[in-house]
Structures are given as C-alpha cells and as structure tokens.
Length: 349
Image 1: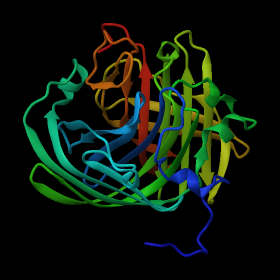
Image 2 (image 1 turned 45 degrees about the vertical axis):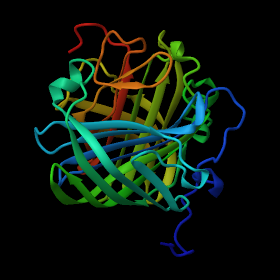
Image 3 (image 1 turned 180 degrees about the vertical axis):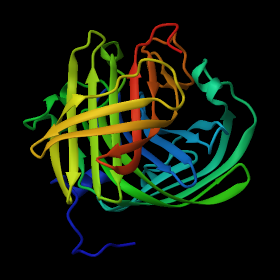
C-alpha cells in the first residue's frame, strides 16, 4: 500500500534507507540489528511485545522474541526461536516477520507460530518453564502518527545528555509512535485488534560491555484524542552515572526535544497496578504524566548474550521488564510502553 506524496514528512531528516534491514555483516565485532514492535489494545485488553534481531555473534541468524499479555487475569504467553533467513526476507525470523511498506509511514507485522503459557506469578518468581504449546497468529498494519525520535539527535539537543557512543546495546537508535489495526488469534479465538504503540530500530555492537549496564527507563505513549505523544529514554551504569538522557513530546504534529525531570525506576517485581509518574521539560513548558501499569513482563539478561524469560534475581545483569501502561496527560488517556531494568536485590518481590 502506498501513501499520498502529500502526506507529512515524518522522517526527522533520516534517510529512507535507514528503515530497511541490512543484508550482510559490516565487519564489526558483535554487530547486531534489532527491531521492536510494542502495542496495546484497551478494548481487547491484549498487549504485544515483538522483538526481532540478529544474533551478535552471527549476523546471519535472526532471533524471534514474543511476549503477549492476555486479557484480564488470564496470564501471559511467550516464545523465542531462531532462523537464518535469506537476505531478501530480512527482517524475519522463524515465526515473526516485519515489513516496511513505506519508510517512516507504514509497516506491517505478522506472526504465525506456537507460544507457551505462563501465569503472572510464574513470570515474576523465576525463569519460566517450557510447556504445552498453543497456536498464535498476528497480522497488523502500523500507521505512523508522529515524526521519528532519533536518540542521537535527542541526546545532542539542549535538553539531552549522554550519547549513543556510550551504549553497550547499539550505536544508532530511533523510535516512532503509531496506531495498529489487524487481527490477533489466541487460545482458539480470533479478535480484531486496534491499538497504539511504538516501534524502534537499532544497529551497532551489542553485548560487548554488559558490565556497564546498570539499568534504564523507556516510556512512550500516543494519545489519539488530542493527537499528542511523548517518549523518554534514560540509561545508567551500575554506579548510577547516566549515559543517555533523552525525551520528546509531540504536539500539533511537531516533535519537540525534552528533558527528563522525573522518571520511574524499577524497584520491585510487580505484574500490574503500579502507579508511576513522569515529568518532562520542553520549550513548551513542563509536562506531567501519570501511568497505571496494566501488565509487566519480566526477563533476565544472560552472560554473555541473550534473555531468559522470567525474573531470576541471581542473573548477572539484573532484571529487564517491558510492559504496558495506561497513561494520563492533562485529562487525556493514552496507552503505551513502560519498560524498565535494574540490578535488583533478593527480596524485591
């Protein structure tokens, strides 16, 4: 599907070629390319965290990672798989495929495979156990709603801090807010999906310096009623030194770089119901947002590479916790990502 050439430019000055997957290695040790799609539909009460990336020690292998938040108290579903796709299929794994229809405007995401079930308690009380498999299918079209937010540009703005050069997970990274429509088939039923979310795309060395990973906060949301959006990304070392400090707000179609005044850290293992606050500062003033956490997934970074699903407090680099939140901004309601990580201690449940 092609959009009209009169539609707004959402590229923030990035080249269109940045949107497409690389077809071969670039000769850099542990170089990886990663794509993430995260979205939540409040009517269906289903959240999706879809991650597709190359394995840092072999650029030819793609890893699928999928986390699904089921409605109500039904729990969660997960899977991971590996595949060496042909160059013209990338980015694609064994079950998950992403496709750029038009750069910075339209993407599609599809999944057709098997997932395993776990309860919320299973996810927060240790590494999840493999078990019986269930069929799952996802077909989504993503329509971009805001200009791209580039981490390098944001860090170099008057409100930013740190740099992508200091990161151990990538050297280039951008994100974009969207609306998602399509269908999701889970647990024997197919439902329409209409949500909001964020996608990201990163490239660079990954996993080469995880001893410098102390934690992070990444939060984004789109507010369809007022057509506003926001995002923040803060990273720090184990000693607490902030290595990346970036944020933005989108108002009236314009992206404004912002500074992080207040951001919620991961302090304990709670699946749902946390009340969090974000405060940002831009040229437009101060922006205060409140989040009620809908569902949090827990994963454990491994040494030297990869993630294990479930929270293992004995892991070498702490806990990584992506999730979905209901956000309030001056009376408007939106839904988006609340993702945090920290080196938690035993007894943090």
